[in-house]
Length: 310
Ligand code: PLP
Image 1 (spheres, rainbow, N blue to C red):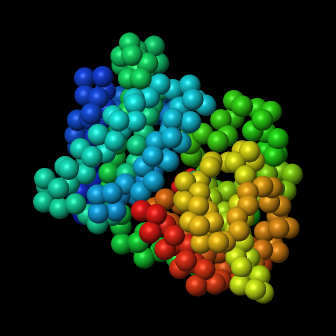
Image 2 (cartoon, rainbow, N blue to C red):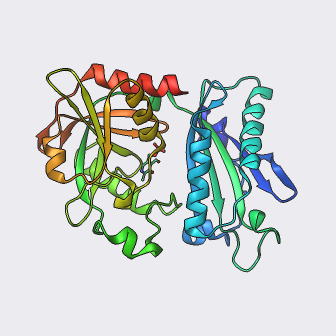
């Protein structure tokens, strides 16, 4: 069946973590691995993180592991300690090396499933679920898409700004496996001629993209730059890429703020970007019928903040 996969996907590496192999054991991700009764498959009941390993160095590893831990706390899923995840990712990167070459960029996806209902994999809650790491070389298509200007459409996420606090069972703020809605929104956008989506709350606040955070930028007449992003209490995922950019921007003397962002703010913003761990930074040139200015110099500065932070 090898011809069904493109060459790059064939080179993916999998690493499983369990109580017997807390530092991971390599598996072939192109062979069946998961029981069909696993709750990740049955209900999308699990959590994940996607990170970028550049020349073997995982960018923002600690921030991703912290967010995984926060998602685990929100969803009440037991997960292995951070050292186990680190060891498993290293094992996967070593597997590439032993096969004759570590790709310059690897997308590292770590997943924790609640496991099989009624059949904990271990008595130790930290190993009671199903845990794996999937390492896939970043494709040329993704690499060349970075920094490219995109068009987005605003789509209603269907809940209001108070939902996160009022309805914790919605798991807003956790990075769960239940991305069917996010993917449907991206298909809707593509069908209507857009590259991506910005979700809004039903009461008119700006949230995030289906797989990215949103940044607003303004350059004042004296050259000072201000970056703004919706705050995580809006019921969105706290973006690690956005946080890294903000830290570096502050060190560079830029102003940053997080708080409510309305759709009016979006339409009056001078510059806009979507940010994420693998695609990094995408300047927005159009929101539905409204065009937005693009500043290549600022986009390059955001990318270099990320590259320098490592
Ligand atoms: N928001 C959502 C819903 C996401 O899925 C992602 C990343 O996948 C982000 C924001 C951006 O997060 P990060 O910058 O940590 O990749």
